[in-house]
Amino acid sequence: MVPTKAQQIERLIQAFGDSIRFEEGPHQEVEETSETIVLDPLALDRQTAAEKAAIQGKSITQPALSKATPQYVGPPLKPSKSEKLAPADFNALISQAFPEFKNMKAGDLSEEGMTFVSWDLVQRYPSSFIGKTNRPKASFIMGCAGFSAQPFFDDMTEEQAWDFFYVYHPHALDKMPYIFVPTKQFQHFLDVVNASIQTRLTIPPGKPGEMFYITFGSSCTTRPKYIARSASHNEYRALRDAIPHPKEEDACADATDFGKDMLLSLLNMHNNYRGTKTKGKKKQQKAQNREESLYDAQLYLGLRPSASEIAEKDKEVALDEPVRHAQDQNVVFVCIDIEVAEEHHGTVLEIGLSILDTKDIADVPPDENGRNWVPFIQNRHLIADEHRHIRNRKYIKGCPELFNFGKSEYPKLSDLGPSVIAAINDLSVAGQEGVAEPDKRFRNIVLLGHDLRSDLGYLETMGVELWSVGGVMSRTLDTKDMHQAWRQETQGRSLAMVLTDLGIPHSNLHNAGNDAAYTMQAMLGLAVAARVGKGRKKNLDIGTEEYLNNT
Image (cartoon, rainbow, N blue to C red; front, side):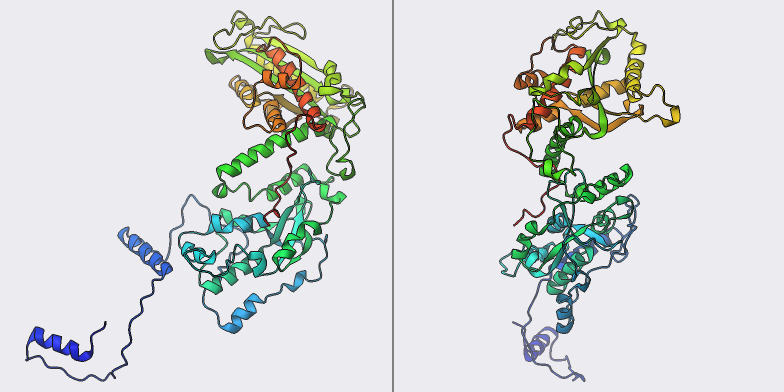
């Protein structure tokens, strides 16, 4: 309890004696009220930061920019409003209607130059971009600490109207499209939250902020298309059925490779943000990559319709008829396997090469596991002449002399790498003997292996750079990943187990030539088996994430 004025005077007289004198000042006595103490968590954060800065001789009013982090270059970042607005201003803020979208219909193209943010990123904003300063307020938003306030982020589809747009993945038109909202609507949502509870939520500065200002069009070949306006959660849930079916232009068939790469980069920008990745996200991305390798192999072999052939996607594959779909990219598969000395992995002993030109099998029915295509595979086995006497016996049973598919070759060790380069280089220009050099077009070459990364690593130690060969695609295939995707397993299996699982006869593994040949057969078997539904535990989507499944 606060002492009265009389009590204060009495205490002073007791302390200093009767000689103390008091004079009336000009101030009027005000009515005494009890003091109410309110702890402001934001003020406490600022006070703590100021004390730490003072100890370090720094100032919190002008924070120094880290030299390692470049300043953001792009659209101006306007700080959200956090002051308490007058009732009229607050009502004007929450009633902002965005009339520019009022007359849009489903499928209409967005305005050129408009900036968007992924709806998935909007949903992840509280967990990914709210810092310590705003976290106490954010907890209040989400109904924590005993408060019963309506949670803004949990019910954001009820708090304001959103105009939703979509972009289909050009290579997966039969999958759920990517969903976007205009950046200015998300900024408006933050402004409403800030004005409601006096916090300072903002679009982050620097590199992370670029994900909130995505611009399509130009070299990206397409722009987001309108779905509908949602002003309630029920309308939001109905959006899935309101998304227009893909059209031919959504496949971006006339786009340049650069344009397609740019589009895919924009579509996946929010997924590539390292600051928001979790182990679960990484695991999910790896699983999706494995599914895509199986999907792409089927496209290359003509076992699956292209993205623009929507009407064909549900038709079954007839194993006794030639494939009915065009072979995507007109590729040549080159499978590589390398055997190294088990006691010294830097010593390359053998290299196996297996080659399949998809042109040779265009009119051939695949049959089970693609076995009708196997006779068209060309196999080679190269043994370094200086190492022909070495056998692996400790951990595996090497058998370099037991090549099942022809005669082994014995080039000098110094010629081993150049022999591989020459073989692939010949494939890239095959069939163009009479064509002038400027008019030659490289064939698309897809590298294949079982745990291919390790084999490519061995080649690099030999100074062999396969990406220098014209026509070699950045897309590679790995039967270890393909089998894991097909069986929906948590880890990859050995080549022997994959072959056994498919029912493909095999012998004399750990001979590089045999391993390459059997890996090629495994790729064909997996592509065919997965397409006809054999052995699948369940059917996973391999395209874009379904952002509207949080209902």
